[in-house]
Amino acid sequence: MIRLGVFWCALLTLVFGVSVGTYNVENLFDAKTQGSEYDDYTLGKLGWDEKMAQKKLANTIAVIRALDADILALQEVENEALMESLSKTLSYPYFAFAKPSHVATGVGVLSRYPFEQTEAIPLERGREMLWAKIKIDSEYLELVNVHWPSLRNPRERRLRAAQTLKTFVRGREKVLLLGDFNDPLGYESVLAETFGRLELRQGWFDPWFTQQERWSHDFFGDKKALDRMVLSQGLLNKEGLVYAWGSFERFSQPFFSTKNGSPYRWERRNRGKGAHTGRGYSDHFPLRLKLTTTQMQSSLNPVGLETVFSAKEGKANLFLKDATVVYVHNEGMVLGKEGRGVYVHKPDFEVSLGEVLDVWVHGVKNFQGMREISALHVERVSPKKRDIYAHMLPQSSLKEARPGDVMREVEGVVKQGRLVTSDGAVRLYAKNTSHLPKEGEYVRLERVRVGMYGGQKELILEERK
Image (tube, rainbow, N blue to C red):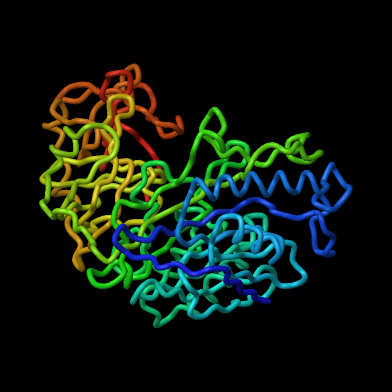
């Protein structure tokens, strides 16, 4: 079922852009009995009463007010009455809500711009998705607010939801998919399986790849990017309503964060199983980005690897053209140019050896003396692959090799944890010690990555794809 509300109208413009956000509010219930509540939020149980419900509502309002998004998708709202309350209190003139009668919570949208049309998208079981077409001056934005089955459910359920979503948005131009997908970034992402390479700015694009820290949800220290905002190609073009590059962010403020920087979730005693305390907010941070009609394009002046190595640690905006994937393992890859390499730690997307990429580097960091790329997205993939060995170093360059380089071939005798070669000795390291050769053994290592630890150069032996 879907509900719409309108309270007042305002004239808004795109001069400064339109901000769009998403926020899982974590179980926003009232103190009335509908019959579909979770037991923990039933009137009279575990301290849940009108006063506690009002405290939870007030805390949620505080976060939304700080976020100040023009259009906001919400997840885990119990009913239309709560959406109406949020709309009135926060002065959003328009709201929509969707929830099947048999589930505990639904999804809603608050907007300062009028809805042209809305529709609930049913799934095989569980929560509906909510589609809205919103008029922004002379432009239109379509969004789909989702809250897919949790990670406790079989992956197949999320995959079917993704396929339903893909069918629904096929042929639509300016679309934003947002919400709690319960689909972390990485090799097993059902979004990537269904919608393609989301790190590539050709087709659907996920701006999480522009961030050094890619997470929004913290479950007792297990941090994942369950919340997503995925842009259609139409929002990446140069005309009309488009994504303002660099505007995507995970939004946090001290009052709804813990001392260690995690979301200050709604508190219940006994590690979330006991009575409500009336403190806390949500176990998710909100996300926010901006749409504009005056897109500013980044300069496409390519840089070399030396610029990546000399750049200041932290955020970056460097265009690396024609970089070849010369090495891939379970936690990262090496991009090579002109015989040298740079390591990319946990890119959260899949590549294959020999791929030639144009990439935007959004973050660099140092780890134990190693320069690493910590965030990047792919601008283009060349249709042809390259010989990976052209971007590796021979054994004769062992002394000059730096962390991030890949050695084409190195051979020698193992002595006290070091490989002694005709071109010098170097320490050997393997996280899985079974990969290390035995003392006194003569070995030949092929395609081995150079690292650094404690100021000493080392060759890293690891599982490779």
